[in-house]
Length: 319
Ligand code: SF4
Image 1: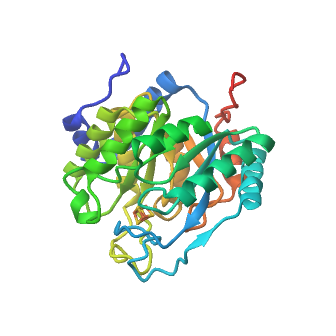
Image 2: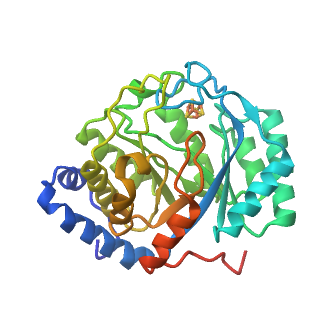
Image 3: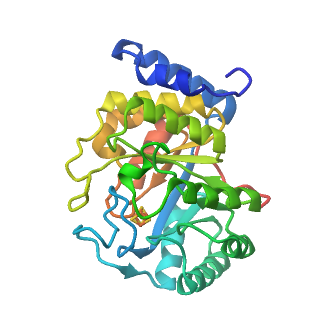
């Protein structure tokens, strides 16, 4: 780690298996590694859903699948609402605005909406635009680059060996292929997943190692928030200490990545745990609401960052 090289799979597993009394030490080391390779800044991002619900895929954690009985209706956002959301996100000090759609991959209509939306945001708001619209073809990757999307999110969600237990309508390898094309295009790669879906500690370590192999710019860490109507609705929420062990372990596996708190941290960690994670390797947050559940208020998060003396990363002047 002195040289910026992360722990391998066996090392990650050791951290995930540490007894509770060693956890503070692991978090402390993860914090030092984050400060050494990423500094004290925290990247703040807002997300907005361009198309919510009605997805044909069957990711068992997801209330936006049209195949489950979850109470999420298919809704499209219009362009003025998208621009307004970008403005509100920028007003929190966030540098990143991610447009998300619940789809297997974008069709013509979605690509057209995205193109129009990105143009409208760029005309009015000073913020970097990221996108997350599922699996892509090479042509679509090229189009996103042309639109000026600088970061693309596509989560591997879980370890390759566990993926078929969670998703049956597409493969882990298909997701990897999109990530490969995104990386080659020059867009920044954002790739993470959800912990606490029933995977073993070995599989959690496997996942961290697979992410390290991909070497993404950003890794969003979600903790399962079991949604009514989904196949994982009865899955118990991760124990806070297991979540913190995972945060430390993923940071130690990925010393240079932006490690972002994404969904589920409120129910898994609560307020105190949120602070522990920020002092244990996390250096990016999502402000406001997630796609289908409410998050903490932006003010609370921004106040906590101020208290921890972690400056919000400013928008690069060169952009
Ligand atoms: S995770 Fe994405 S691809 Fe899977 S069901 Fe939800 S919206 Fe669809």
